[in-house]
Image (cartoon, rainbow, N blue to C red):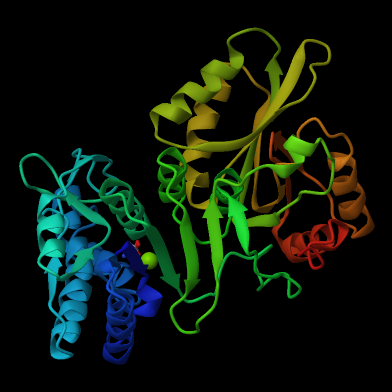
Length: 410
Ligand code: ASP
Ligand code: MG
């Protein structure tokens, strides 16, 4: 008898009919005798609506109260799914985050899971019940409600699967798996049958839809996740620790797994900085102190004792980041600050690239042939990222998808 954790996203729970369909699928999972925990997100756009509602009441909603409010979205879903299951003669029980034993710190809106006390869940499973858990939420030691960050019902599911030692963790959504690229930008994109945790992490933090913290958690605790559609049956995509065949047999072969894209990128460049130790620290420390996360950073080779430092931030942070950078630039006697808010990032992602020359040049050639100008470049062991103009993001993604023959791999 296996233990299965299933997660259903908000797009699979848009209305009452969808709730009934989800309940049917959950019941189906139990039919074979398996024990089932279903973790659910808020219905459709409920979380967005609740956030908007809060902002109509308060310019800056109190974080603790906002979490109480947001948690109600998932409560609706779990009550409704449990209700639907019971209406179909299934013994089911809904549990909120606290009841499911998800204990967190007090970082409202982005709380971290401290520990999971799974006794209640285990007890209900032993009674033969289907346990429907409200995703995205936990509780502090004081029993205050917290939420785990946008999209974090995935995290609730993965964390429960890890803690319960589940045999499977299936994440159901409105697409049938993880794609080699965003199909809206690249029509030739195809579903991957599998992808490694690290690669998925790069895909997740660069555009594809899967909560990055949940992938990180799954990697640390080695929980394989299957991402599949809740609407059509299919194999989906297995995210897991892949055995690296190449390493074992020493073969070198194309291993670009996908193209990750991200729009809404802005760039700030501080020009004419003195080229001496401490300058970068002076510029980036106040950005960190203001909780601004900086992504691609480029410092050009200094000439005549001066250099320029450019970095990207999320477009929504541009105003704030530019203010902080201007203050630092003034203090440092820099020549000036310029910015561009119409940028995007496009990356190739794959574990076969380290120690293998030629990937960067192929990226540059493909973008050159497509007439795409590269603003900045950054690389990691498993990723090469180019910052390009947002208007050319689609062209860039299609060019790289074709150059690395991602439409053809099996
Ligand atoms: N409902 C929450 C959100 O929209 C959590 C989730 O969907 O996973 O961010
Ligand atoms: Mg969601």
